[in-house]
Image 1 (cartoon, rainbow, N blue to C red):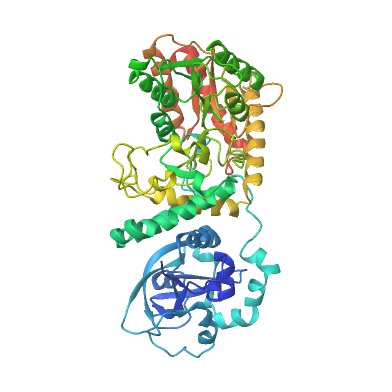
Image 2 (tube, rainbow, N blue to C red; image 1 turned 30 degrees about the horizontal axis):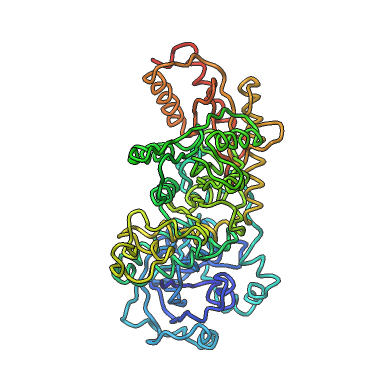
Length: 600
């Protein structure tokens, strides 16, 4: 990717600090962009660039004639670097397509830029040759710009050292992380005044991540064959490498799949089930996962494969979940060191509705003691809670969605399989070119490899997977995992208490040990007549959804036990006022359900 720079990033040391490497792989060409003008931003060292039309509209130009901007066309920026640049530029700038005229024919190494910048090229006119590229144009208010063209030489002589030295550059290119709360909404694409307290369902993609996706998509469409045959795989491998570091595990144990349900399907469809095997799950397991297990049993009637669903009503304790799980193992013939009929337990890392933390590590260790495989549906874990997979016996299989709490583009999920279990996952879903048959050896691409199979499972859009790199960069910009999740957890707890008070003191779904709540809080709604028939339940659900959409907000309303509950997902852009707003909408819904006016 090629980008035309015209301000502080003309200085190589500043650019290298932002992209976090030495820039040795980059080349540059001095170039002119005609029809645009560069101005200082009031109170700032850096400039803004706007079109001639906007400059005249704001009466910023002091000289007659069509303006032009001299800058540098930098070539070879990779997607990860583009993501970091978008975070650096922030919401004041938007990446736009332009055509520039190079001032020299040859693109030179970035290291030679300082010598060329010192040359007097003020009278050089751009060549007739035009190169298409992108640049960051000013999209904030024109009233913030100063009259008169911003002078790069003044910045170079007086300010560049401040932006280039490590001690001060930590403030210049890596400023203190932004304040959390409503001021952070500028980094997201929500509709005006939309109150988003349901991030947990589908995730919300930051603007820099979306821009990164657009850049990659454009790159793919410029040469689809090159992108699909050569470009995507190194990027995908780099994403896996970064995720492996994030989860403290090995690269070869992490692959990517579209979502957690897909990952669970991949695991359970690979297991060679035996006669009278039992799969254990829970009544709060994700609906599509339970249906997957039921479909699996339907297709294995010849061996009498069975699903045992353990009933859970929250709030409960982790100790109680462990007790009923062990009871299920023992009641079906399991003994320590000797497996009975139970072959696998499928357990949530953090369930969906209700949004509850499960003792998945303890269940996995117990399962191992009884010779039972453990598959962890950790759809909500990564980006919401620490995920350390350094211990190969953490569990047997784990799947976690990156498009929920990690903020990548939907969908993309990590499938973690420790090397000791990779022989159990013989094929991808669907089967890859790299599958190596046991009955027909030599018909694949070579020696069987777990991770290589997932490199290509058919033509697909790789951009969501690759967007994980930009999401990780954005989260670093926000201050990192501990800062993000401390804020979100504390807000969830306080927001839950606020709703509890608004709703008249009903329960929050939490136990006395505080084991159950991460960044999603579950609060009991005020009582109202609840239907017993399916049609009535569906009508109530539609009424809640219609009312929330009409109020420009959304939360998850569901039934659990003998109560109706709301699940609110606290994120970095939320404040207590968001809980207050949603609470008022829900109180209105409950009032109408009680007096019958909801049918009007």
